Length: 629
Ligand code: ADP
Image (cartoon, rainbow, N blue to C red; front, side, top):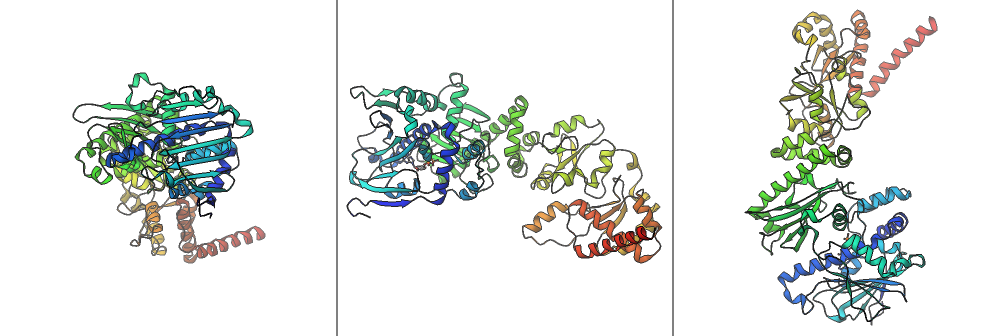
């Protein structure tokens, strides 16, 4: 390090290096987004300064008009974005423009395929940012002075985006940050004032701060104001077109895909606030990390207060992006104060309903968009049924499932669809829980129902067992697990009682129970099986086996429970079993029947080796039959 200027060369964090490479490659066809990203950063920096200045007005000094300047220089092929916002100290520069702090980044980057279009989509989920400058520049210089620090504690950061950057101390009279792009040979279009002006109008018109443009070759010209310079959400809905809403979303989210839908509202009266809420088209890479910052951007009377104000929406709506601007909250509100604010619960409830209504509207008016939404965020929305009892009815209408009515494994059926298709006198909604779609669709448990043309929901998401437990019913129809003992089928055999049926086959049931007594709770005649010889079901008060497996996997120890074995009395295998007189033989076949029932349901066998031995013995016999026959 040279002592005079503290010049140092540092390496980018590995993840930054990877991201830089990928970004240049995969975002090339969207290369002009760098300008939006720089202006967004500049606007955030101005927002942050204004916020800090609430507590320390000295930070603003004489330089009170927050603004963003863009200078193009045709002689040197540079474009510079300058703000008089919060600025960065030396340490902040190294941290912000040398590392990526988000956890899970390296796993995320490993998913990149090399396919430009797919990767661009993925990077969109990650959020593009400052590094997009290297798509068009072969050298980027950042000069910054943190608000509150003296001129000689300013810093210059410089990099060619190849793996290293240098940092040194400089003197800078102005507060804030200037980012200069030395454009690559082929990217000189971005030095043309007209091109820049167009880009600003398209991408950054709605930024709350003025954006001006000057050209270094036309020195005597006044800086030209290029954008509207009013925050988008403060304007009235009728004046804003869809493209403006979309661009504002991209500014907020650093996502470069369009949002699926949005909702912009002003609430007046006792409580006054404006909200602009967006549903993204793609899940962010860290959707499943429940600790990741989330929530809305909070403004109070147009002054930015905080990012990720998670208090305004429940956790299961963590994918929503947007802004809340309150007229009533105090300007000095902090996360802690916010939590205690009596207004908060009411706002949170109203915003939650707003999001659910927006989703309901999308489901009705744009089912294709809703299907896309469901694919990305459906599992998260399901958490709401478990966590937000007050909104269960609204949420129930938004759920989508796969069912025996679905072609393939898409989750495309609503409970309403089910109810409308079901015969009028069917007062239940049937479902089966399984590890995956194939197991659910082939489950012996549903045979009796599908045979009678009754639809069964096929539930395969981890959260489904909890979901049905919380939901319980829809439109007056009780949700029924077909994997449980004692289910009542709507018609036919349902009229004969279980006892009567069991009585009829008592000797066989008793004999099977005797050989399987350590493995099953009871043996019953099945009314649901058609093609399978047997199935296992959970007792009415037992945990569902799906749920049991999940709880056990998470380390909980549960009291041992044995399933009930149901046998299909009309199945040839069972008929043969009842004809076997040799006890040893009877025991072997009965055990295999149970093993198969467990396997079909997705359970693991307690003693697979034992099963294989039994099966091999049987196959050998078959072989000797063939040989001798
Ligand atoms: P993001 O904006 O998504 O956080 P970036 O890579 O664009 O990611 O920027 C990283 C960080 O660098 C920002 O979060 C911010 O703290 C800092 N930064 C970038 N540009 C500026 C700027 N003009 N003024 C102050 N800080 C900035």
